[in-house]
Image (cartoon, rainbow, N blue to C red; front, side, top):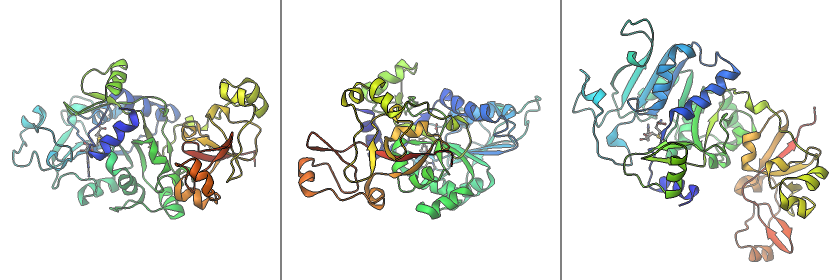
Length: 400
Ligand SMILES: C[S@@+](CC[C@H](N)C(=O)[O-])C[C@H]1O[C@@H](n2cnc3c(N)ncnc32)[C@H](O)[C@@H]1O
């Protein structure tokens, strides 16, 4: 199964059980600290949708509580009985051996772990000082009690359930228990006053109508770990994982119940500095002459779209440095997007494409390329209407 198929299979089975690895969390957080060592200082960090006994998020923030200068760490879990993906339930040893263990609550209640002082008086605040109890409800992030924790927090960090990504983002951005994100300019305005957050999602989410306006409006951006970097996740024992993803995970040193999710990336509204590093690019003439992409050199020019005044840029590193018009670039450009270097004009997909004013595709061309729809870009190649995969429209900023 390809990486995209694995993700959609997970989605259709509503399997949200993918556990983030320590190294991926550490690498991402370090980028924020490199930019500003005080990123988390004096802050309350909430880790919702976690399983604190196992979670590497809880472990990382608890172990680094003092180094990060945290004021308080709160981590909540979702009750096993409420999870969509059922696996045999067994309380952790940590829980079952705690004095507050309750057999009637263990499976149906969420749990809350809090760290804010040196409970064992050993002179430092760390993992051993975490205190816990059962929540009143199942730990659903939309519940009143978890909403209250969100309101208390300064920063929200997690890998939320993939199947509820839109809802989770709206929950953060709008500070309300909403079921739907607000769209367009209204949503962007709400996001300007949002809590700080760092969450894992699927790269495809950049095209969502609830997400793209934020990317364009610079209220959300991709995290520091590049989209091209594979992230590996632990999965419940026995979960079906494609042999290719398992092999990739193994090559990265994760043997057993792990999978790679090739489309996953971080979304944030926290500064990490990497996004202000401009891309080093060649002129159009030099790209055509020296590009490392054979097809561009052989072609000898950049295609112009038939239904929108933009040129097709097949690879991010082939963006010509001297072109002033609109350029349609692959979605992976966002990994390298520097807002001081480029402005995002729009996204050429579906309704957003239509709103941009893309001309309708003539019927005879739709017959030639049956996957071509109105609202999509196309250019003519040897008499055939070619449709690129997911393009973002950008324009260079010229020191205005
Ligand atoms: C992608 S996993 C990530 C877990 C953990 N944050 C990590 O990265 O290791 C998402 C978790 O959210 C839980 N979950 C699903 N729906 C939820 C909801 N409505 N409220 C809170 N948690 C939920 C899932 O059961 C799953 O354990």
